[in-house]
Image 1 (cartoon, rainbow, N blue to C red):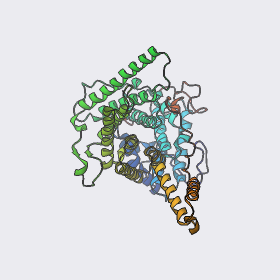
Image 2 (image 1 turned 60 degrees about the vertical axis):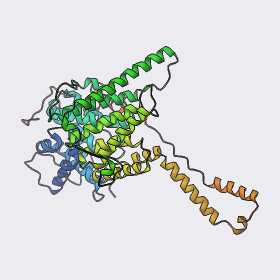
Image 3 (image 1 turned 135 degrees about the vertical axis):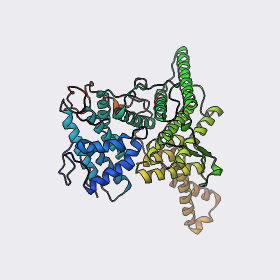
Image 4 (image 1 turned 90 degrees about the horizontal axis):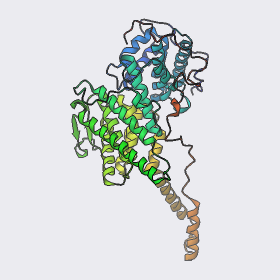
Length: 490
């Protein structure tokens, strides 16, 4: 059994020696393994919206001269191995994580630090935390990474490593907010996204359109999380609010439609097979998309449309228009996820698939979705147990299974009844049935301490060094200027 995890800011006795000096190349078998796993498995999805593949192709070479960055990479690689292979324990991943964290905290005390390396390291350490179990209880770097990104002035207008870190960071926050039904903390209108759909229609600009649909989904997430919880007692006020939200919904829907109509041809499916045409006999169509960023973008698009069908201010999901809209886009998400072979889209596919799966009513479709989740877990190691539990509950499987268990118990009790009781008068027999029925009630679900919904992401509440309770308290010193000390071209 691995030892219990240490505090992220602790200084445990090291049983191995994480890198603390620059080198020309990796020569340790363990470091080579962990870096290979990072590049081939973790960096794969971190770069899903980056045309230059900074995390999997460029930064690993730069980390040879930056021990703090290298330790962060090795921590993620080691952490992935612990998720997919029980032979690897968390202690090694934690050593690299702690070493990188200590290096970052030490750098944050230096006003002449390399701000780019600090921000990039924090982003990678945040990825490590997301890969860990009980992620909400272990988020030392989520607010810190965001604060350091803002300190560098990175936004949707940035290029190079700044753009890579920005889009990875806001993308991870968006997926989290979709899960918890939170509003994103960084207002999408402040990102600086170019939403002029008259530009960038040529192939090779797929990432630009991916950024645009991420912006739209963030606006949809905020719209969903801000649904009024109470009716305005003033009818005029209620009517005004409903009309305002109706106009907002139409604007979001128009954005989605316009996005889908204006994207390059390379972002539409190359092939499409109906379920009966698939060799796998899937319950879902096979949607063949080329290029990872296109797959991510299409998943986000269908997710936005699926969510919009559920939150129309005037039409319920039971109306034919909204019901058909939800089901059509849910099947597209399932079709993409069921047949995709690119592991680099798993992080987005998980959340989109969870949203799509909630509205499925066919047992065959529900069971295939669980098979898709099992495949993703097997390949990526993502912890999805709670997600599966939530789906089974929404589908009513828990109640159904409890009822079946109750029926089995009653049958067993009836089979073991004394023969004399089998011949009792009808009134006594009815009394016995009442007793056996009361012996096996449907178990009540355990109390769940729900995370508050409809709020602004609380994990990012202090993600600014101007806040009184800013990240990295007792360590952070404002830099003299924002610069990097390396000749490396980001």
